[in-house]
Amino acid sequence: MAGPAAMADRAAPPPASGAPPRCGFVALIGEPNAGKSTLLNRMVGAKVSIVTHKVQTTRTRIRGVALHGAAQIVFVDTPGLFRPRRRLDRAMVAAAWAGAADADIVVLLVEAQRGLTEGVQAILEALRDRLGDRPVALAVNKIDRVKAEALLPLAEALNRAFPFARTFLISAERGHGVGDLKAWLAGEIPAGPWLYPEDQLADLPMRMIAAEMTREKLTLRLHQELPYELTVETESWQERPDGSARIDQVIYVAREGHKGIVLGRGGETVKAVSQAARAEIEAFTGRRIHLFLTVRVRPGWQDEAERYAGMGLDIRDAGPGKG
Image 1 (cartoon, helix red, strand yellow):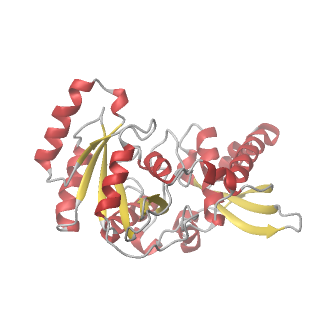
Image 2 (cartoon, rainbow, N blue to C red):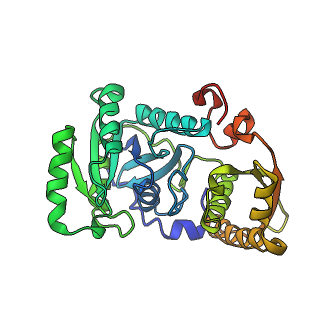
């Protein structure tokens, strides 16, 4: 359940009187950094998926719940589809395709400035093989970053490459065109009862959402490859009599040298991360939070089933071997 601060930005219309309810799953797929998390947050009206300038920051299938009239749209924000190199990469890509296979509708996001890349072409080929006749919509994103005259040729080229059900030109960051996409999805999902309460924003446990918020702050703070070598888990969540909560989280790193980077000189880095994460968790939950972070060196954490489970992934999807 979301707190008042998160709900204030939701601005969802109430169920339409007399209209039959609709509910369905929509998977957002695309290359890393295509804007899937930004679009999910925009659709839901609150931040449920981490957003950074770095690629491959979404590691699990995050379900955000959006409302439009009598329709409840359950969005699945999947990890970016890319050529996997590490074991964690393989699990992330498997999770992305599983999310698409489970959805009623798939939305492929393509960055306007990058266009029909080799990566997008590979996704289109896989869509034909994996999803059969499931409807796929195209959302050309970040249209505010290119000249308007370039958009129509790009949309035409993409539609020649794949038979999209509909095409939308959007800016998830600014909100342009997002309303039209949301309205179309609301009309296309199946008729049926809602799966979640009206005020629920996501079906992830709050423990996992809080861990993702802390990982986002680490990713933004650390400007090297280290963000891909760490993970965050909520170790305990204790409710207090005054309505606040104490959260203890562990930041796992693979090497001793990484621990010093995360801590920073005199602990300044982890302190700044803790303050930023606490503020965001408080805004999301609408309550006071006491956040305590611990950094632990755990060589080989990327090969431990428990660590994958903490990210909502299955280590079996990663295949054998390390790296």
